[in-house]
Length: 287
Ligand SMILES: NC(=O)C1=CN([C@@H]2O[C@H](COP(=O)(O)OP(=O)(O)OC[C@H]3O[C@@H](n4cnc5c(N)ncnc54)[C@H](OP(=O)(O)O)[C@@H]3O)[C@@H](O)[C@H]2O)C=CC1
Ligand SMILES: Cc1cn([C@H]2C[C@H](O)[C@@H](COP(=O)(O)OP(=O)(O)O[C@H]3O[C@@H](C)C(=O)[C@@H](O)[C@H]3O)O2)c(=O)[nH]c1=O
Image 1 (tube, rainbow, N blue to C red):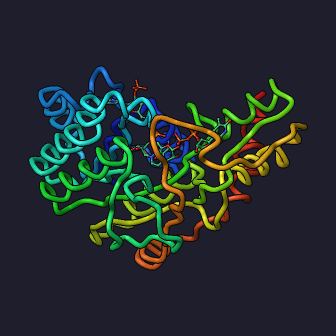
Image 2: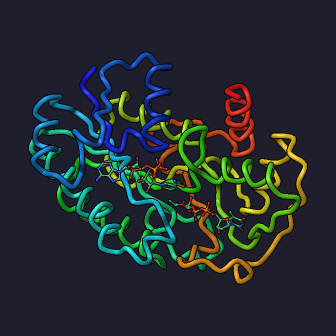
């Protein structure tokens, strides 16, 4: 098996890749820390590519603080665009393919139809814009790319909506959650499995792909699901986006059509609530 190099290894998806690679018995995968693999430092990147000579790089490194990015456009753009471009340049030099992770937030979300890879991306936030710029740079530099857009990632690792809800649910009697933003949660363990399956298949079907869990929900229904499955007693009230002001605007509808990734790689994608149960079991058995 050829070497795989993961960037952003200490983040949520990076940690999921580590767990899933170990479960699948993949040993030729490496997770250098940011001090040895900062995607903003081309010299450091050249060193780490020279050391591992990977056939694949997976870019999980990103600026993911959606509201903060509105006031921090320079750093968000550096990490999400320039960092991705730096990796593409190294991949080109070493003949490696790049798996670049992107987001449903590249879409405006004003059309209530499942989004295909060919739909026009018109981001409405700095985070979404800089992620789209990263996609475009990667595609322009390196034909051997898998750009995988995903949405609403959660897992037992790092910070995410599920962990926030479990924390708030334990602290408060009632919560108000937006019910008019619709999308699909993605268990980052499932995404990690899909990425590794694509790589180990040796497929050269490069391009843009959409991956989330199956089904459709709102943040409100997702929160209700989290409390149901975890047995948390808390009153949850649905609210409109206008009742929960945030610095960044989020897409109202960002359900993605996953036919391309399913058909190209023969993936079986779990339903979002089934994966939520797996994640909550993992969180509860770790307590
Ligand atoms: N989280 C979500 O809901 C979604 C995420 N995505 C995308 O999925 C991918 C993975 O996200 P996720 O794992 O959740 O994000 P995290 O924020 O958990 O992880 C991102 C990691 O990147 C690291 N990082 C930041 N800057 C650099 C750098 N210059 N060099 C190397 N590493 C760096 C961060 O380190 P530090 O913490 O030290 O800054 C962090 O560990 C990202 O591309 C994201 O845009 C897509 C849809 C939904
Ligand atoms: C905590 C909280 C959030 N919300 C809403 C705000 C927001 O619309 C929604 C989710 O909030 P969060 O801030 O957790 O999630 P957010 O950071 O917007 O999540 C996004 O992250 C980036 C990185 C992505 O790429 C996206 O796919 C998406 O996962 O829930 C409430 O309505 N009530 C609450 O008490």
